[in-house]
Length: 371
Image (cartoon, rainbow, N blue to C red; front, side, top):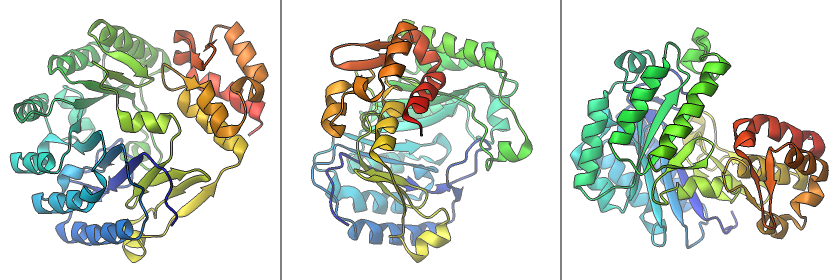
């Protein structure tokens, strides 16, 4: 494979101690022998892919990377050591019930400088409903362990619009999360995926009005507590935006490794085999989706408008040879007139109102693009 100038690398770890009922990512319950075989396959894939120098970020997600044993986690990070020389952000997703002090020491030894912790809720009944096996106190202890070790770039995940979740419960979860002083918070509304346990059970999120009220409260509360709402579902203090995810929202190319992972290059997107059996048989297999210039331009808009600062017009023109206003003249003119978009000399972004109705905004772009 020819090397591309990709700034970021993602590894998908497909193992969990248990499966969360809302999750539709590729994952399975951890077994040592299977994880060893997966590491063998991942090593093969890494060694047979030409990876450019100067990566900016590495992100290890899942699944639950911390479900690996200490020795397996060490092996995984050792495989990535050759690519970490110039990176500024090295993130690993972890859960409190699978992370020990020895595993924390292993992360730090290999240069991990950011962790994402799945809190989801403080409410024990909601956590049980989601098949989560930790408490808020467990998350609090883990955050303090990282602080004590000198790692302060911590992100917490929370969910809202959960069945039976009240506004009061969401508010308390958010308040408690902020009390832990994380640098970053991600708040996601429940989306029911067909292949998740919730999807198969016919579970439904809360009604749209309640969900909208929850989102409005989240944005207001976090703003008052020093968090910049830099992406539609993400908030950061002191400039601690997720560099890795921001590169993806800016539609930069990135490497994806491991079964269940996706990647992107200048011609399109690719996905790895959807089953572990397929991946172990052929770690280099990928299904490729070639994208036309029109499709790539639309995806740039779709991703870029998720960011509060929006899309750089100069970067868009350098990438595609066209200014945004020439590609989508009618949509941009009408949405600016309606107060949904803000157009400046070098940027196109959503207004606060447009941010709240982003899906509707994107449909308008899609209609003009005739995709």
